[in-house]
Image (cartoon, rainbow, N blue to C red; front, side):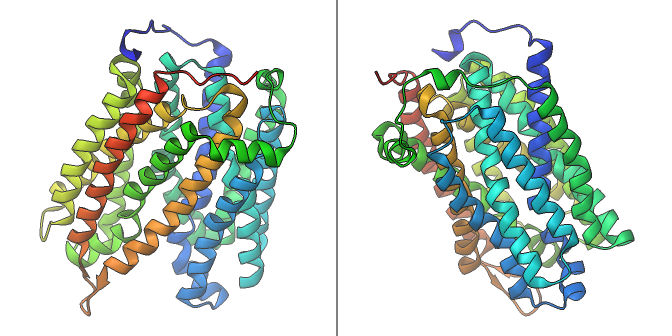
Length: 413
């Protein structure tokens, strides 16, 4: 069992470099995705576009990322993972540069699609590298540290991006990401060693056959299903968070950065802590504890009608911490599902499923929540119950994943 596995006391200098560079890479990718919604106030008047057109700009990335993730999955185990990482990260940087230079709506839409094609595959490649290089008994700590990228983009990246947009125009926010991402790509090119041990293992020669085998493997299908529902439970509350705080809880817009900064800092602490606990007491145990606590916090939060800024901030911070813990536990556990020769394809399909399910979840949430004439949201409490139900089912599904991981995948002869 995991809890009884001997722990590696420290990481080597090179291993720390790999963890740091992958975390920073994820920071730039997540920032590129998260920075766009807050830029709506600048983009819509700047390009003279409607909210519907802006919605397409936001969703274009996720849709193209999902399609490219599935398409690239068949080739993911055919090449050195370092080379794959460099190719797709270069495409991501070029796409973000196109976003920063786009003078019209249609060119920006095309740039977002281009960026999504490359950026949507990077998470799966990074996860495959982590799974290749780090054994399960220390993988929780690695995943916990890399998970900090999400919180860092909220605490550091979004305020910085909005500062650039306010002072230099919305184009500069994308150019800022390019400026940060380019040195990261250079470090990967110069310092990262090849990640090609999987090439020595037998795998289908045909990329389509490899994709089909991975997608139809009963062992893997359970992991895909759990990953899909995991994303569903996390993405439904996010799109309407600001509207709920402002319209229902009457939080002034100038106080919103306080809430988001503190919740982001809480998630920064929760990621490494959850990773260490996952390695110590078990991945499934941390996921279950985080899920149960998140369920309670989500019910309480979505039923709030009036509360002080301090209480709302505390509840939001706790919710983010619990969600972070469940994600760290789940992603670490799921990483143990695929056999070494299938990791790239498995991670690619899994990442694509998360992108697609996230988009579907946001659409379902939009059907449930109704905006009243006074600007407040109706049925937000119902949305909370739906999220809790999804989390409860995921706990059961992840139990079977936990059982699967206890039985290592056989290498194909």
